[in-house]
Image (cartoon, rainbow, N blue to C red):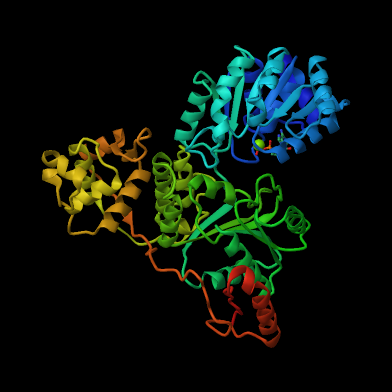
Amino acid sequence: MNKEEIDLHASLKKYFGFSKFKGLQESVIKSLVAGDNTFVIMPTGGGKSLCYQLPALIQDGTAIIVSPLIALMKNQVDAIRAVSQHDGVAHVLNSSLNKTEIKQVKEDIKNGVTKLLYVAPESLTKEENVQFLRSVTVSFMAVDEAHCISEWGHDFRPEYRNLRHIIKRIGDNIPIIGLTATATPKVQEDILKSLDITDANTFKASFNRPNLYYEVRPKTKNVDSDIIRFVKQNEGKSGIIYCLSRKRVEELAQVLQVNGIKAVPYHAGLDAKTRVRHQDMFLMEDVDVVVATIAFGMGIDKPDVRFVIHHDIPKSIESYYQETGRAGRDGGEGHCLAFYAYKDIEKLEKFMSGKPVAEQEIGHALLQEVVAFAESSLSRRKFILHYFGEEFDTETGEGGDMDDNVRYPKKQHEAQDDVVVLLETVAHTNDKYKSKDLVHVITGKSNALIASHRTDTLPFFGVGQDKDKRYWMALIRQVLVAGLLKKDIETYGVLRLTEAGRNYLKQPESFMMSEDHVFDIATDESIITAAKGEGGVADERLMTMLKDLRKRNAKKLGVPPFVIFQDP
Ligand code: ADP
Ligand code: MG
């Protein structure tokens, strides 16, 4: 080790008590300390905070940390203060401070005491803050959760859009470090462009979580029973169940309680006290299960969550990855079980219908990926990692057999000829179409767009009409994942041949297509299964509880659906 490395290790020990850097941390820190723009893509829990905290502590001046999560900022500030001798070493600057406190913060910064200043993007837009920060020494700017800058991310924040402009005003040559756990190529590109750091040194860690087991099951009207059965088979283990709506959260939590499972609801509609109480009950293991909307999880660090169930499929693969990522943080078992029905996708599409067109298009494209994932017969892990721009080999990669599709392969058949038809059609229609239109051409259905390209499409119009639309959509999804086609990033959806696709056309080879599950079974939205219904012989006590619950909730929820389930 050279002197610089020794110093970094000494500081790591001194400030954080760790004796080793995790993953790419050391290279990231060296890049930032050298004054280079830096871009860090690491999964949640990868140790991103330290990538800016350590450089901030060992450099002159104050590092400005932009983060959207006020609660998390506070935790970080407390942690850093605890290991330093001086409270002034880290501050939060936001609207909750009174005049005296603001004065103190500014004094600490001017005196060079403050090494880290956490700000929400809104506070940075305040002119007085910009003026003040212009007048002090800034070591670098860190933009945490940088995906918030992109409409393609799962958590777009309009205020992030202004950051580049503000950073330029604070100082012209301030190094910038952007950090995110969301790493689709599109979001990456957006971050680099929006922050104007296309010259950044990029550090990307693998997103593989080898200890997580992925499973997708068709969602039927028995979904509640399915969930209860799963939870009972995993008795005593901690788990999170995600639902889309608050109402469903309430209902499902009650269904679980009635069935003797220790569960609490969590959503943003509950008052703060209840939320904290339920969260603590989960952390302290007074309950096993939290039924929650996505409001639950940000910054929750329970290392031994053993399962994450999606009662409703999320609206993007990123969300799915983030939410399932809360399982098995300690490296132990983590079962990720998602229930999927195409109906739910249509519901999500309906939610988007009021939004601006551009936003809708993005939303649809993201949903399309979710459909592809859920219906796919390919390795789940390979699919997710492919989505994040990472190659994964199920034979040699860690966790390669940890999903339903790999363990219990679906039937396959030779589809070489169909792949050729598909690729030829893309080639001869000059990469014009998104999946849907392409399938129209192949199955011989026209629309305005297709009609306008008559001469190009003519030879291929209807070449594949012996198979139906769903077959071709499934094949496209599998060919995409196999890398023979790709979706154009700019238009997000137009299919193009890849180099591998062109080679395939020159020399076609075997292509085993997995047959998809049927996922368009209707789900009974209200799931009103009578207590004595399928699988459930309710006992006296449960019936009384049920009646009582119904009475109490009739007003709040309408008549809530209940399933009383007992394994025979
Ligand atoms: P991220 O922001 O990437 O989700 P965090 O910065 O919150 O991750 O870090 C996740 C956890 O990893 C924290 O508990 C942190 O203390 C721990 N950690 C970070 N760096 C190291 C290290 N070098 N050695 C051991 N633990 C580390
Ligand atoms: Mg973080």
